[in-house]
Amino acid sequence: MLKEIQLVLCFFFVFVFAILYELSLQSGCVFSCTPITKRFLTQEDIMSQSRSIIFVETTDRLEPPPLVSCSVESAARIYHDRPVVFFMKGLNNSTWLDSNSTYTAFSLLSAMKNVFIFPLQMETLFQETPLVSWYHKVNATQEKHWVHISSDASRLALIWKYGGIYMDTDVISIRPIPVANFLAAQASQFSSNGIFGFPHHHWFIWDCMKDFVQNYNGHIWGNQGPFLMTRRLRALCNLTNFHNVEDQSCQNISFLHPQRFYPIPYPAWRQYYEVWDTNPDFNDSYALHLWNFMNKEHKPVVAGSNILVENLYKTYCPTTYKDLIQGTEGSGHMQQNKTE
Image 1 (cartoon, one colour):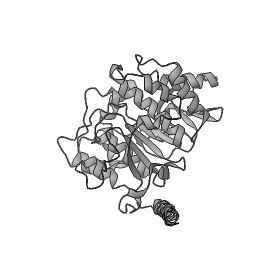
Image 2: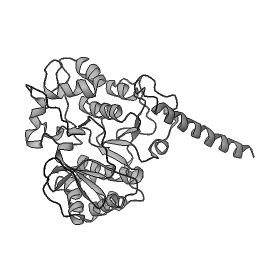
Image 3: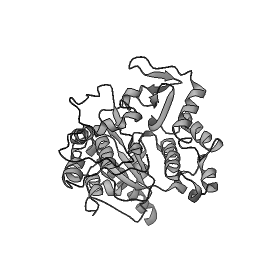
Image 4: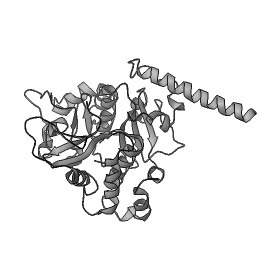
């Protein structure tokens, strides 16, 4: 009888914590009033509504560089009423990094009431998906692009299990995405996998995971990522070139115009690090993919430089700008994000 009472009380307190958290999300105070319930909520509690904004880090680093911090912060600000969940491979269940962490970026991210950071446990994540058999067979040490491939797999499994929006950690959010089921066009008839959104257990994501395993080729960069998304979309839809800034739709999946996330295409990525006479307004965009994988030169963001990306930081992730750029003036470099 005592055990039954304890069990009922346990469920009651979890329920109360969840309600208090939902109410705190609606209060509008994103940074100054971190809810006391945050530490007690589980991954399942937070992600049960298919409304999460999801980020993934598949290296072992524990200190997010400025661009990663900006990506998470900008999402937390734009989607202030939704949980923003950052999965990191370098964490484990016994690690708790919060606003008192010695890692500056972790400290500022943990202070955001709707940001949650969890360990990325691939063995557990891939259970009950087509990816589990592949994961047990693949030799990660022999895979040239393992950081990218494991990220491609993880984002599919996370969206399948929990639903929501996945974003790369070099994507700066500037306004809410108004659709739920979507892929992002990198160009006409070609899909990226750097940002996409679906409800949990959506058939398209299941088909993508099956394709991942059936057509696996780790030697070809992007074969399990943007090329996979494009293969699956082309199998379903008669894709045509975009005209004006109009999105396409097929099988109840929106295929969003390149201007939505890629107004500056990858061959011109350096434009983010240039001074513009007049900064673009990006009125047709929901978020900006900064192509950090292309930044082999490790171009920095320096306070006072007036380059485009500095101004984006000031506008969309001001806390990151203050703490990680101005706070380390002279060394506020944008490190290469190896997962993108």
